[in-house]
Image 1 (cartoon, helix red, strand yellow):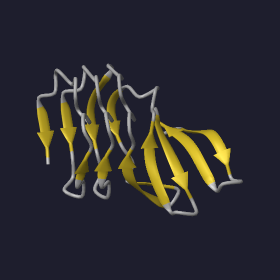
Image 2: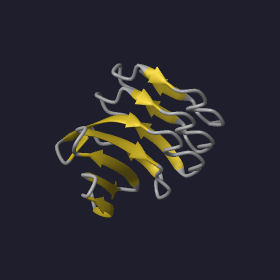
Image 3: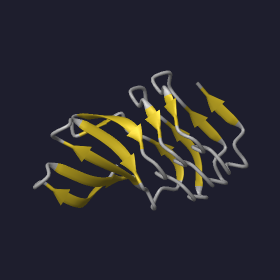
Length: 121
């Protein structure tokens, strides 16, 4: 698993980092991490449960929107919300595993996922 720091914004104590094609925004002051717009994501996506000691709790708005090459997604326990249009238009997406910790599904989070066959909760 290779990590690439995209922006190191320590003036705001925030870091944007890419790991295996998934972008994570880490806020060290709020002690939160979220998945942000991930334009390099392809294939099977395994979202990390924590990064640099901070738990990932949110899949942000449009995080994977339009990524036609994503085939499956595993969301870890601890994520509590999936943002607006997070997976919109992911036409290659066939399987998603969502833990019971996810309590909030924003509108259109899986709209246009025309090949989605399985959502396991």
